[in-house]
Length: 312
Length: 176
Image (cartoon, rainbow over all chains, first blue to last red; front, side, top):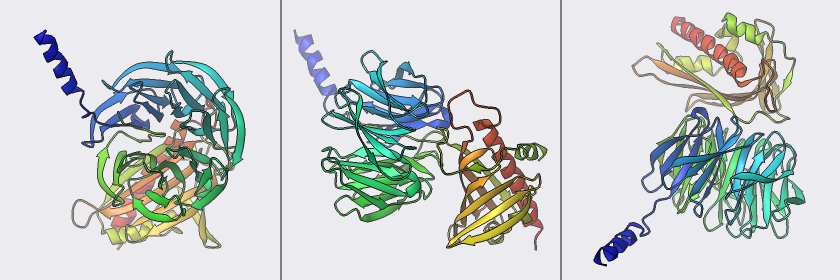
């Protein structure tokens, strides 16, 4: 009896909330994922995945990270508790963008070349449904109420709103030229996406569908909201910078120099993590000062397209 | 050099670089050379957008034109191919010149490049870093036609960068 009590006590102490958050950085040039512990800002593991990894989606509920490998046409599944690849989902196409449903039951995959969105059952790890969407679907995001999937279609210059229950298109909204990265505010009210060729961001009120467009840096790529939904952060691939935008006024608050050719961006509370494709590293920005506080070496050609930080 | 001329000679017609989709994975070529000359002297050569033919052995001529506030150049290669490029920026403070390809005969698309000049490891030395990001020519799924794949695009730019930097070194080190 005594032994059992001691064992339980020991278990409880191990599981006190000291769990770290992890950033999963896909490295296109060396077919790997760098796992960064965001409390120490160190790479704790480099995991071999498929060929030319790009998209990332993470789930605390499933203890999983999904990585899309566009050249090997598959998706790697990583167990986030031991950082091991536990499976691969074959996709006949070119998987780029990834997003999980709010309940983690469905993984949505944008298939860049065959213009489809695939819905994968995360329990069985197999494709269950698919939808012909538009030309070159890229960024994906699911609403917090799980009812809508938003898809940025790069070559159709629109965003499609998909009914997740029926996997049918409810509506299309025309945006700027070549929409790519996409993000939704935590309350689901604001949809933001970059228009790469217009050097702009579209900010759409999902209730009224009123759209504002404003200029950012040269060839923006990805976008993320602050935790309080008041601020937007945009990577500008050809300016080596991040633009900070006040959501209420759409005015630029700051422009922060980061590494070479920044692509993916995700936030962990007061810090933004930026994957730099050109310099093969990650810039960490303190959002209270809008300054880069550290740079972490990752793998060759870091991309990290999607929401890549797992808060456990 | 022969290899790059052969690649440049591939007749692909004029390729539009901006309108359509590209391959899924951007490609990179990054080359560095150390030159025994002062950074200021090397930067003066590198920053001249109108004079690449004076140091690049594969370029026969450079024709510059202004369209509004923008500056463009047409490079004619010695093998007869060509490329039409737009100047993005010249930054004297960081000794960095950025440009992109608008159209041309090279087997690639969505090409952006930067040449950066920095002090070398020893006094009187300079490092030049030439970096490009681009996509292969073929925009669809495999099978990829020969001459339109990642390897062809990378090989073409590698040849241009290697031969260009080698001769830039020769020119900069011999110039008074």
